[in-house]
Length: 301
Image (tube, rainbow, N blue to C red; front, top):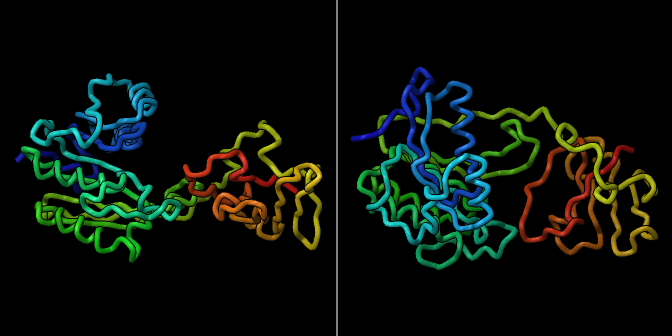
């Protein structure tokens, strides 16, 4: 059996890890492997292939990782498992649009033709490939663990178990791992070696806030500034004269403690109407409402 132990007891992997990714985007997992190499946790890694269909993402991926587009296998639906080169690890964050609370929640049932059901294509490839990877990591939104999708997720996991994998899963939040953004994501780790034990690294509260990352010199339209509001009963009320289409209400007490401190009362989208403090964390960014009034950061008062 091929493969390297990418989780040795001495915490240093002396081998070169062969990696393959699906739904690759601009290559976040690849960046993580490069960081592991730079920090001398692994000796090296090679990207055997990636799979992406978005033209802009492909160009960005190749520029960021300095690789040729020939490594891109294109749509996962067109890939034949028997043609895949051996990898030690596969990674795939399959589409979340039909699972996310921000979407229509159509689900990811097997052969349902939803975008999220493309996750099953990785299962198909595991069944077709000549030699399965020792490790497989799946990622999606935390809502995949909800009651609405539990039965489908159980079937998904059962297929992996039938292929010989031992499973470990957990919902992780980016704020527990040094990133000032509330971003909960579900991770499913499948390991072919039954004797290999795995546990998720315990996170700690993020010490940084948005202020540590925000640019200082940006257009005023992204802020609620003192020229555009008045304070009434410890709340900031946006001056409608300056912007008649929108009305913001911000709680100063919540602003001083960070996080969500108010809302745009004229916006019908619950998530995009929120006002966020610089002293807190960023929200999970959504793709369903991308107008420039979605998120407002409050200037110091």
